[in-house]
Image (tube, rainbow, N blue to C red; front, side, top):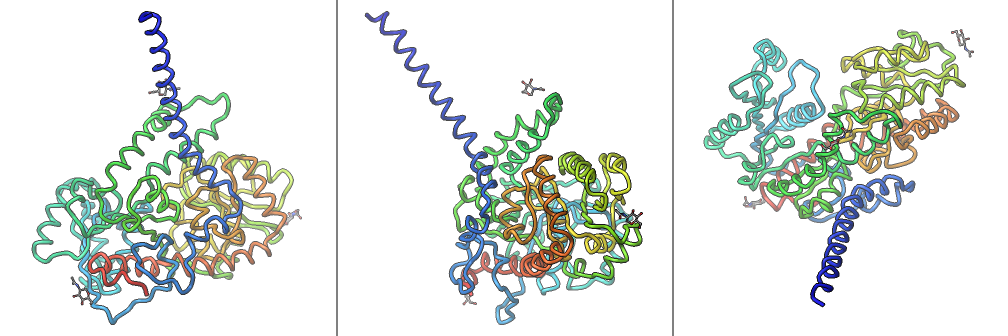
Length: 491
Ligand SMILES: *[C@@H]1O[C@H](CO)[C@@H](O)[C@H](O)[C@H]1NC(C)=O
Ligand SMILES: *[C@@H]1O[C@H](CO)[C@@H](O)[C@H](O)[C@H]1NC(C)=O
Ligand SMILES: *[C@@H]1O[C@H](CO)[C@@H](O)[C@H](O)[C@H]1NC(C)=O
């Protein structure tokens, strides 16, 4: 009896453990699947309007707001005792060289906050001596309206948070900071844990990486082997998500740079609502505006004929994970039947040569300075961003919209929930060749007049949401509110 019983019991427990394993995997794959599902819903306005659009008369505690603060008509209120003392931890501070998105954000935000009258101290890694000279030239004589930069000692470009932390403590002892801002994990969580007045901005989280790893692997051809480095990344991403969920709560306040990232931090990372705030990054409104003449000049200078029926543009690093393989293939199919459609490629990287092979309808122009980019955006009809890797949110989408251009972009939750929130703003596609080709064909059939109409709506939206000033006013309000809760009451 007993011996009969044993195997049965064993069987039961092993099937139970199978059940648990199955449940575990169901849960594991439901999370990304939920986001994928979320992205394939077509009625974007219906699904996101509650969280992303406050009513015009919204009032309440800002800390509890789940929509992007950029949506509020924020103005600088000089009746408040506003001069804040702000400490910033940033791995790098951009001087001269072309910076990444995170450094650009730090620079735009804190330069604007300084101009608004706040005292900003940036703790960052050292730069080469010749770059320091540029900094001096750039800032002219020391001025109270620019951030004070503390470069820690050591090797140029190499971030050492403990050195920066020492400098911060010294400066904090001299006069206490009202608020501390960390760009991503510049300040690691075991130090951040001790600071109740800290806000961290996340420029991409591991859950978003999981999503982009899925999209990237799906673009692999049936016989194409998985690269060892990508395989390693995909194997490591779930532990990374779990790790982040465990340590993120050590940061007092979280700034998500897209609506969907805010949602993930609240709903999956389980950070209390009142500690998660959505503030979308902004671009300098002086650098990107509508200028039709500039656009026309740019077109003729690069030799786009007058009878061009549609001019598309793509910008950024020309690498695989920015989606260039799918744009390359979709565009090569599009021009088979459309001899008057052009693609301008602004950027450099491994895919430069491939694009050149597509013939005279593709103009590959290399990396561009900000002023040339301004002309580029004005010269195109539609901006295409086929990214497979949208951790954070590409500033190029905002720059194009600020320049009055509609966008065509991969349907990721961040882009759909914050950028292309209205069908009028452009086109979204699943990141595969067929879906992108379909979007391109639709844009071609609509023509440039319709694109310009869409562009007007984009400009209006971008101007209300994506200006550096709007971003800085939102951060200012958050920092004031962290300092003293009476500032959290809106209006
Ligand atoms: C991917 O990584 C896993 C775990 O490290 C390994 O078992 C597997 O063989 C790798 N696959 C390929 C195709 O490299
Ligand atoms: C467009 O104009 C160019 C000359 O600028 C001409 O060579 C070309 O054939 C024209 N294309 C079409 C399809 O009309
Ligand atoms: C917060 O601000 C209010 C209004 O300016 C002020 O009366 C109060 O003393 C401040 N509280 C603290 C703790 O500074």
